[in-house]
Every structure is written in structure tokens, then in C-alpha cells.
Image 1 (spheres, chains in turn blue, brown):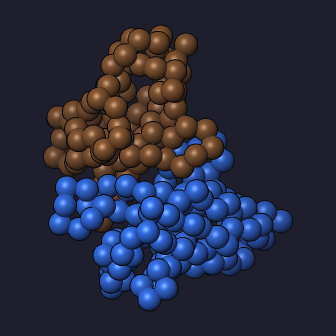
Image 2 (cartoon, helix red, strand yellow):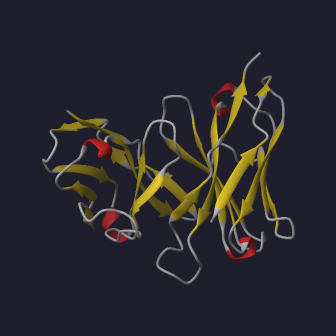
Length: 123
Length: 106
């Protein structure tokens, strides 16, 4: 069974940093691109960042560019998101999402989501 | 940046057909994906590449995409379909989500 388990969410002060992790299991992690998607309280989904299968290519939403860094460790089946200079607008549930299999019609779909981890930025 | 627009809410009676729309500039030139999110749980993919259903998604879910508008249609809507629905497309390596449509089954 494919599973994505996020962790690392916490209450952090404005200007602070936090590192989120996503532990993947049930599939060959290194074969799939991954993303982080967030959802502020009572709001819609917002894509945050994505990373290629190898980790060589990374992509960011304008709202987090220069503050967040996505990375992956394929030997440990782990996806990470380093978040710096956090502000109130970063308060959200952060989901780890698995893209579909490469070279298939599902490649660009977020076919599996984790349960999310909550980040609260407040003094 | 690319914007996808959805109506905030729609309502339907059980057994009726409902259409949820998503609009964006030349959206028909892109693939559209639809996600269902019920309270609490994570989003769930219900349509990929404009009109394809993943395994396990009921046939009452269908979709299309042309011009500037993509549509998700639920035929014979059931109470269990009450949820938020989000459209999504890709623009220059960034995933773009619509604001979401809350479907209420009266």
C-alpha cells in the first residue's frame, strides 16, 4: 500500500524556520516526482514546491521562492521541505503529494496524498 | 501568473446532475485534473487528463475541457459526493489550483 506520512509541523514564531519531512513507503520512491501542497485554514489548495525523481530539478511557487528548499533522499525514501523566514501567510496544513508514474498518462496527476502536517506561524 | 477560477459553491438535490466549472485562459490547451476533498481527509484525485477516471472512481463522475472552460459533471449525485472540488492544471512547471467549489447535496 502506498503511504505518505508527513511530520515536522509545529508552532513557530514569525521569522522562524521549520523542516518538514515526508516518509514514503509502498512504492519505489526514486521513480516518482513529488510535491508539497498546502492549505491555509478554511482556504483552498496551493502548490508550494516540486522535485524531480532524481532531485536534480526543483520548482517553487513565487510565494515561497527564496525561502523554502525542497529536497529528497532516495536512499531513505524521504521528501523534505526546509522553510525559512516564515510568516503568518505560511500557516497551513502541508501535504506531501506523489505524482503519477513517469511516461504514463498519470505522470502529471497528484495521485496520492499524505494526511498532512500543520504549520502555525504565530507569536 | 496563471489563474484558474471556480464558483465558490453549488448545491444539488440527491439524484440530480451537477456541473462544476473551472475557467482559465486557453485552458483547453492544458490538461485539467480534478480533486475531491471531504472534511478532514486529504484531497483525492477523481479525474486526470481532462476526462479520465482513476480506478475506483464511480462512473457518475465525468469531465471535459475545451476553450477556456473545464467542467466536472456528477450524474445522479449522492450524499457522499458532498465535498470541495478543485481543478488543477500545470503552467510552466508549476501546479495551479482553482479556488475550489463546495458542493452541497441538499
